[in-house]
Length: 92
Image (cartoon, rainbow, N blue to C red):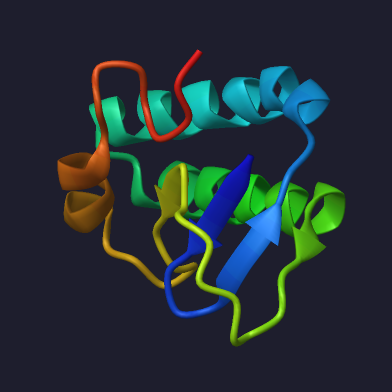
């Protein structure tokens, strides 16, 4: 699966990693629902760090279509709230 982190580029993430990423996505959603900025920031950073850890960076000149688009690490809670779909940032 091709994932784009806004402002950073694309990574190829193995399908087998999606369950773990969904757990982090659930924590991010819960933080957004409560409006807890500290919890939100921690959950967003954990999700992005895990995507970076398990993903393989694509070349900067690659133009693969992204299946998922994730916000940058410095995104505001309201920006991420608007990006959420019915199943979070990462579909189940």
